[in-house]
Image 1 (tube, rainbow, N blue to C red):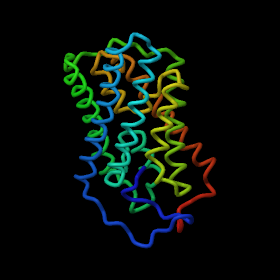
Image 2: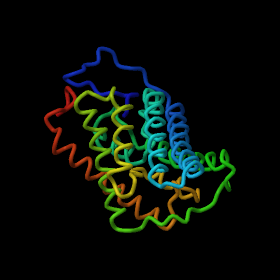
Image 3: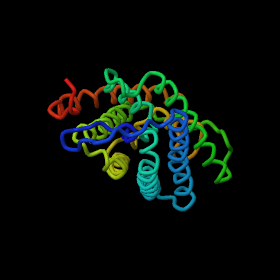
Image 4: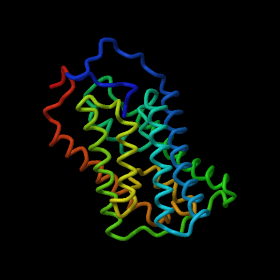
Amino acid sequence: MDEARPDATDAEPLAVEPPAIPLLNRVAAELVGTAALVAVVVGSGIQATNLSKDVGLQLLANSTATVFGLGVLILLLGPVSGAHFNPVVTLAEWWTGRKDPKGLGPREVAAYIPAQIAGAIGGAILADAMFGEALVKWSTHDRSAGHLLLGEVVATAGLVLLIFGLARTGHLRFAPVAVASYIGAAYWFTSSTSFANPAVTIGRAFTDTFAGIAPASVPGFVGMQLIGGALGLALVALTFTHRRPAGSK
């Protein structure tokens, strides 16, 4: 989703190098975007439980709000920071572009990830505040079962495959719709309801509401998300090696 520094491809060559965006602006976009995303996830979960006792309807409301919110945030902030909002995406972006002098560097990674985590925590607290919940109350929602951990591997691998597959094929302009649609679908086809994001996972531990996750379950989820990210990159390499940016070797 890194539209701030798009790669030239055979399909969509760039005639002019876009101007560099200051790191401060990009970090601010990651913090604000991740905070807004978690506020949408947690807030819509609280609203859903207030309006219905049907768990299926609660999940439908939660996933629908997340789809629309995520799509808008990627569209708005993608041109600034790439709209990662996710340490796995940031690490994958660094890894795939580590030999490119214009790629995401260690300094940017070291700035993006803390901003994403801080934003996620702030977003959870903001959502609790809007609905009159305790600002910080550790979640009691245990999510440590093995099948849920498998769901996180699948969800995260699919997300990375989608994002970097779009980049390899020159279709990143479709990221707002494609990524939001994937996350909305993954809410339903994965057992874990597709957190697929270490920062969001940490933030959701701070709220004892519908979208929460018990702190004891966080390390397992984050570990599986990192494994899923690596698997997703392996699938990208396996599937899209025929589509490399122009001039790369």
